[in-house]
Length: 481
Image 1 (cartoon, rainbow, N blue to C red):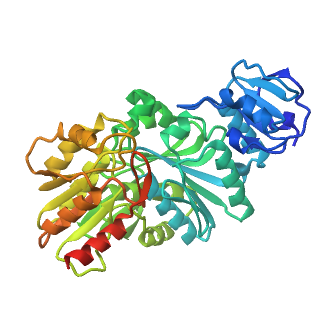
Image 2 (tube, one colour):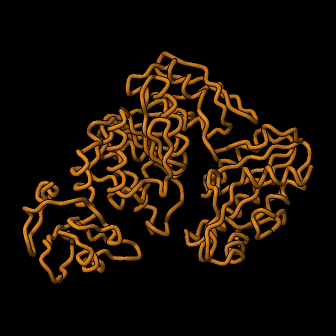
Image 3 (cartoon, rainbow, N blue to C red):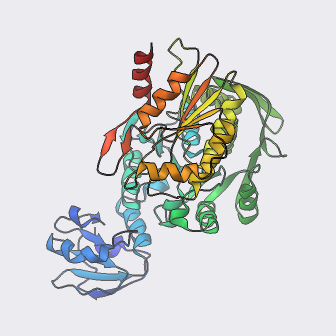
C-alpha cells in the first residue's frame, strides 16, 4: 500500500522524502520493525517513540510518522502529523480494510460490569444465530476461538488487526469492553459503534486520569461516536450521560421509570430471578450469576440486543445460559462443604461494596472477605476499600493482590488506615490468607475472595507467578478435608 493512501484523511507535512512510496506494514514498536515498514512515533506514559525513530530506521523502516520535530539521517521519508495516536488508529483501520465498517460494533464502558456485559451480549447474539467476536479483559474471542488478552482494549493497531480477523472468519457482531484508557489514548478513534452501553461510574484509574472529571469525559467519548446509547439511569453519572448525549437513547434501571427495567426480584446464593420488562412485554429471567448489580448488567445487555432487533424471548435464553469466569463465581459448587467460596474480580471501592453487599443478602452465617489492593495503582482507594471490607464483613482478611514494584506490607498498611473495626486479620501471602479464611469458616458462612477474579497470575516485584485462585482453593480443600 502507498504511504499516501495509508494517511488518507490526515493533514501532514513531508519533512523529508516522499509519500509516494510502498509500505510493508505498520509498527509503533521499533523492535518489530522490518524492511519497508512505517514507524509511528507514539508518546507513551513512560517512553516516547520519537526517541526510537533512529533505531527504526536502522532496522529498515521506509518511513517515520512523528508529531514533534525530529532530525534523522538517511533516505527514509519523515512526515509530521498533529497527533500520532489518532494517525495510528486511522492508518491501522485503512491498512486492514476498515474492518469495523463490516461489523456491528457494540461497546460497553463504565467502572464495573463491562466484562459481564460482554459475555451476556455474546450469549444473546449467539442464541440469535450470529457469529460473535468479543474483546475484553478476560480474553478475546472470534466465535469459539479464544485468544489471550493483554489489556482490556488493545492498542489501535492490534485492535484493527483483530477486527480484520473477525471479518475474515465470518463474524457479524463485535462486542467489546471500551476502557477509559482506550478512549483517552485514542485506541478506538474513528470507529463508529452501533450500540454503546453505560454501566456506572465510581472511583478508579485516578492515577491515570488525575481528576474524576477527566475520567467522566473519557467515558463520554464513546457515546459521541455511537448511533445508540443504552444508559443506566439509576447511576448519577448515567443521568448526566443522558443529558450530555444527543444520539438515540434507551434507558434502563430498577428504581426509576425507564424503557427497560427489572421487577419482582428474588435473590439466592447461586443466582437471581427477576421479570425483565420492555414496554408492554416481559420475560421471567433466571440468571445463574448472583448479585443485584448483575441485574443492571443484564438490563443493559438486553437493551443493546433489543435495539438490534432481537426478541425478548431470545434475550431470556441468552441470559440464562451465560457464564462469566471470575465474576461472582461460586467455586465450591462441586464440593460438599458447609460454606461457599466466591471468587470475584472486584478491585475498586464500588466493586467491593457491590460483591459484599450482594453476598450479605444470602449469607446465613458469617461473611468473610479476603482482599488486597494492587501496587503501582491509585493509592487513594486503599483506605476506602479497607473501610468497606471491615464494615460489610464479619471478618476480613487483608492480604496482597498484585503488589508489582511496591512492598506488599506497605499496601496493606495503606488499607488499614481506613479500617474502623478490629474484625480484621493481615496475612501478606495471598494463598495463606485464603487458607486462613477457609480454615475458620463454619456452616452457613460465605467467603468472598476479591480482587483477582479470572486472573491466573500474580505480579510481584521481580516476576510474575502462576496463581489461579480456583486451583488454590481446590488444593486448600484437599488439605483441610
